Length: 537
Image 1: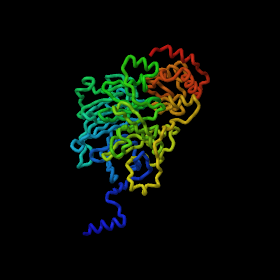
Image 2: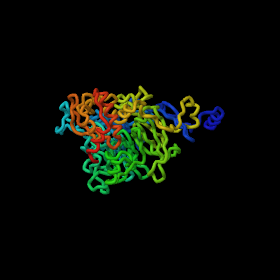
Image 3: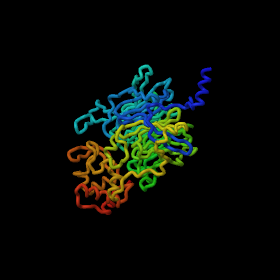
Image 4: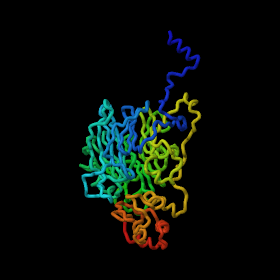
């Protein structure tokens, strides 16, 4: 009787319906995204993370994420309680993109609570190579498998299922996913040595396929080899959707890619960037079958985390690849055709609202979680490239969820955003010669040619820059091996630009660099042409 009276009382006074679910208190609403028929609320659910890399949704209905310096975190999305379930002390995270990177949970996590992670470390047992300080300089990485203890809320029983992978201070990839046939797929960068990408005897520059115990699948393309595909530069997104595998990949300064990964396919790096459309690329593609990307970006946007949306919660985004971008500071949705082998439409959201976006995942009820990447090395190094990046609270976890009709009044004060029709420009306009430098050189040698200490040499007081012939050869054909600049030794790989820049552009670029580094004499187009013709492809 009392329940009946309560229902009558509520109907008269307009009590809130029991179906009106309250949002978790941890959500801090930021803005609204308006789609055709659906409105979405974008909220912040956590801040002050330290260089997060991976975020994934677990079968345990928790968020899992990594921080590059070695932390594996587990978060209750309702209460906001976060636990560091493991700190890996041996993780090496100095430099550009080494550290604790990709992570994936076993798809049957409740019964098989395994967590797979990839991280870099210094092999102190190998003293064959020392850095300029005399310290061990062997970079390696490993894929580890842990078991999650529900009782202790921690990771136990570590096992290296793929040890001793060549690594470096950059281009380590990486992403992990588990396919529908229960194989671990591992996208790995070329470790800053482009020769790796075209070698079947090394692991970097590949997508690898591994049994969950670390053994080699019997049906891999090459017997007794983890290799699944090759010719990759630096993939940072990997997902399976409807039986197909997709990867996002960073280009050098052009041709960021989305690739449809097929067994034993070659994606061309370093001889092909994007499509086979330059003369040198066509020569290579005539000799080796190259699988071209299904989408590219020039100027580059730095594509990172990749996932697939196929939940009924947001019907406008069904059958779309979801992509976070770093330089682009945006969330992209790429619609696939029915066959899944072409991208037929694109949509862009959140441009310059939260800065660099590193990764994303989809929860069991269709919510989307994002992590930002504003506390890493890129923004301090390239301040001129970024604007409107939040200055405090970095880094963050963001949540995108459906805004219910009964919530409109509560959040009516928030700014409403719609789809961005075009991506924002990546560089500030400048002189033609400076634009060439910013597009092709600044990402390594920095804006003023100062280089990166102990990693990329400065251009000032460089013997290579001073020697016109040597400098032309280097810009055209690249360089590898040890050099010394200003008393410091460097041992890295520089790509050549012969297949991307004309003789006029090479001349303009070299003369600009030499001018700003104090050299008054210039080179001519004929100087460049003579050296270009002296070498064959």
